[in-house]
Image (tube, each protein chain N blue to C red):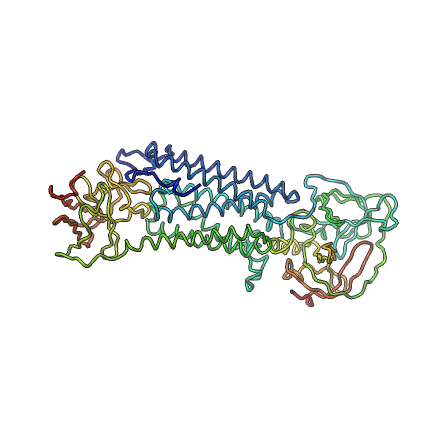
Length: 352
Length: 260
């Protein structure tokens, strides 16, 4: 997506991203199998493969889950987010190999169907210590499959952004199931502190990172309602907004991105129509608000993507009075053109 | 690598757009450092994880190697083949007992039905661990053979004992899988025993040496279905221990098994 109207394909940035990812995965698996075979020569090849892919997938899931909050905390991590879906699909692929080998190893070639065996071979659902951990892994894999299968923007467009987003938030359910899968499974036997410590550290890291990023963002959700003039809310001074950047404010419960550009001020909904990316953390490039996540673009005055693209976001009436920016909290329909507020010449914000 | 070395010295106006040909220079340089850091974390984690798993004992499955065996077939309580031991056997029985199982998670009861006490030749793959031996029977390979019929030795009761251990499926435990016991293997063990693989109580003495006892009912019959709910858990079983040759069997009513 760009004002150049070029379809986004396997562009150079994605190629670099994927090369690094492929190298990392190959080295991880090779090293695991090599070290595993050296220190544990009696382990079967299947065991090493199951362990290598399982641990690798879980490690990669931690990376995937870390990127979102890291970008909320510091936008300089945003390049990691751009191609995160390839990380996710790769992680699912590794999990699928782990699950497939395990399903075959432990449940195939028996007297019942492997999937029936998966849920019935261990029937101790009444016991925490003996709880069947494999169905937890299977459930997580189903979620990760649905996410991987719908990761393409085709599904985002057809499922609608809210449904797609809700589906992909299930990754946290999958993560919880995988922690249970490991704790109730292999860690019942493998008691090396490094393994237990790694999982505990990962869990604390993920939970802590999300809590910290949420705490850091709570200021954004503080409702701005104290200074109202004629239905307009005083959100900031003009020069509080960097040139070609935005200030994010919360009005009537919705985050609004107020942009200063080209001697003007415009306000649009903060949520990108693509994946709810924070438009207010984006930048005006070539006259268009550019989402920091995947580069989706919108014109500031009407909240519409330039043709032939069709994404639209809500727009808001804006005024500039006495070097203060005022925004009407009532949104216009998506794509409605609103005259930008012109910054008077004497205002500091006119400097560009 | 210090955090500030990675994340500082960045112009605030740098902005990354993924579909543009190149990343902003400082941002690109920083991402290269982040990539190296992530790769290092992955490699160190990989080595630690691979090293940290517990050491596994020697257990062998000669996958892909098929051998020919000639001996006397036993049907019950679990299929076995008695093969004459070559050479002197002063302290050992004059025959070796090979448990017989089918491929996959199936016992060989159907394959050997009607062969009790008959001399047969067969092809199979050897499975062995700590003196216990098993053959995975190659389908359709069982056939008549000439030779001496080997009679199982007399039963010797070792009295009633209360033993603590773990019920394992003998095929995986002896070598088809490694590890082939404890909770991660519970579902597989249940599947194997359900399919007819002989259930074995593995008991370890104070020195850690394993003793294997075939589990049978008080009347000496197979107990596969009755033990499915107990596999892979610590368990206490009280029953009569009987030795036949070098094989120990524990005769006990499965309803009396006591999970610990």
